[in-house]
Length: 112
Image 1 (cartoon, helix red, strand yellow):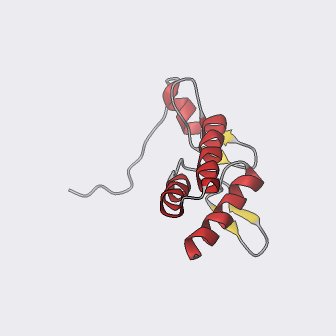
Image 2 (cartoon, rainbow, N blue to C red):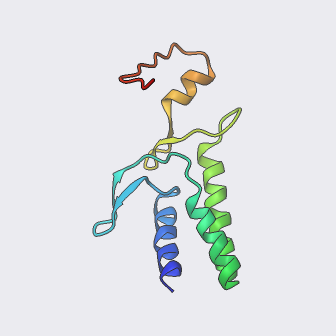
Image 3 (cartoon, rainbow, N blue to C red):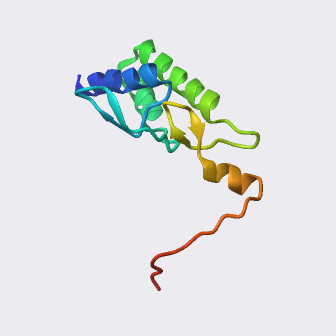
């Protein structure tokens, strides 16, 4: 089943990096974009495969991915996106907003 093969591939990224990077070059397994913007689609896919096929390995994959997200993105009050899955550095903007830093937001174009 193609979906199962895709899930195996996706999970290999989690297994390799701890959290799935935003973009990876599959031919070299090199990280192209190391960010992780808190996207739960991989866990959702593991859940649907588990429900469809009934194989416990997909439930285990989903649980492992969930635990990894909690471990690497949890803050004092919530969860933060990662700037890099290589360093596990949390998004800098999150800390500035949480702790009252001076953050300036510029809108380059506003539609009315």
